[in-house]
Length: 152
Image 1: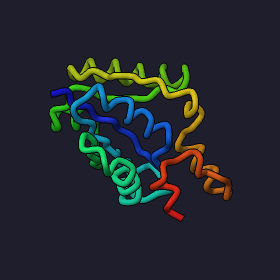
Image 2: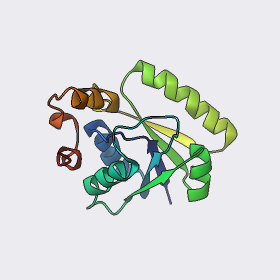
Image 3: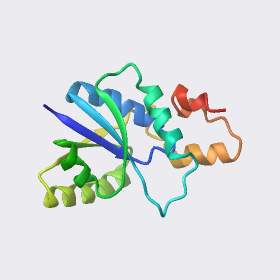
């Protein structure tokens, strides 16, 4: 079974995340969206909201599940018996950052990282941009799935 985890903070999930997950579905038997918890980080949305947004977005996709976790992603992958970590790449800076993490994960375990390039139509979207637009009352709706749009 080809099981993958897609880790992130998803604060909030964006159309870019949704695109990566949808394009990953044909590649894997199961994708576990893993919302990482970092006590040092300040989130705009609660953990429960972020989980609900993702569950609602993928409610009709049986190959997708959503969990929360603390600690190392590779420890979670081992625990879940996931063979792969999925990551989306928007630009060269993402690649350099993610490459270092992937090499480290591969050194510490035998878990492979699979990189998917974001679609051109969503490559400019990041959760931090969405949060900034939201903070300033801007039109964020075209950047996020329906579940996040419905939050207001």
